[in-house]
Length: 489
Image 1 (cartoon, helix red, strand yellow):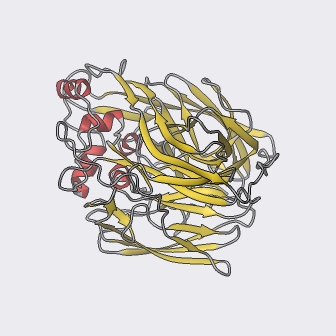
Image 2 (cartoon, rainbow, N blue to C red):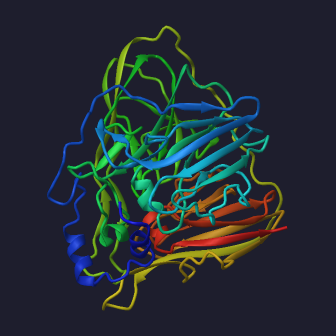
Image 3 (cartoon, rainbow, N blue to C red):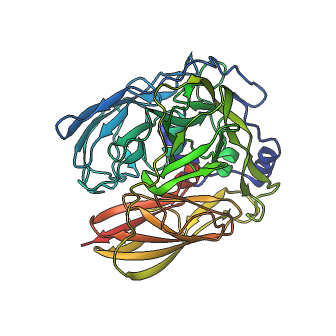
């Protein structure tokens, strides 16, 4: 991994990137497992799926120590990748609504870090979900997250969010699942599938990412499920399983398919849908989660796939040689269906979807995501902005009155898709230019299509404080595509 200073300098503005070098990179962009032209073996494949260790709350409290440090095994190989408590993903944290989650985060990295409880509706102040904190190397910090008693039961995750190093640290392996238990029982077996990608060289080092890959949004050549390469999931025919799928990739959009079997979605971003929906494919932007109900029918072997997905292009940004940004087809895991289940279950007819935000809209706003070359066609790098400005942590970009509900139109004035993510406060999707989002669906990451828009309703009704919203292509966020929101009581 690069040092903190180098990583931040590259990420915050991509300084010193000439258009000629960018064009050459676009033309030869490769997603190999190592350095370009030096592919390495992915290591162990086809092993039984192993889920991360779980730590569960007791008596309304979950107290855990998370040590962020290098040196974890990925795809059965020793690497210099990073993890929590010696593994990537780190331990799965399970809490109940009304619990207190206390995390002692210890930083054994060579750069600052912090912790974000992605999608969890908790206070952003002090030692809560505060993205303005920096835990320096060799130090620790005590977080306290108070889960509201009425918090939705669902699938969430945790990861670092220190601006300028977020993409590097997640690409290196710093991720973990966070489950808020509750809701109706769904099936006889539950699994966590945390999907990440990275690039590892022949010596087991996480490969350095060049400026061109940061501009496009890096996609690693090694795509992993729970740190494993193409693991095998064994299930009995007729058994109903709940797969909690988390897209923990830095930039990769996952277009999930399971040919030969049904994909039935029960929840999105930790919120239940009104009823299970069977889909041909489920698209998850970076940061999105989906609870899938899998009930295999015929015995056999089936591939869980991430199909090719076009995230747009760099054409029209002023970057010479611009081209499309398309993920390749990837086999994530194999589902092996055996004999009949001894305890078949039925899909539920309805689910406890959250109610729509109450109250009328008090204000409407528009925020605009954009990208373009800095300094014209000469020297300089790509500029990633929200409302024409790059991130400044001390500036209040949007000031909200506590207790109000607002409607935001997020405009994507660029030729690439940008996933919008607002911390702390969930959003209700009202409409998008690309369609595909039923009115009323709540989530915390919304994929805004290139040259498109999304209209969102946001209740700022219970927490005051400062937080952020940003593009969840994390290289773009690190390069400045993030802004602050200040809710004042």
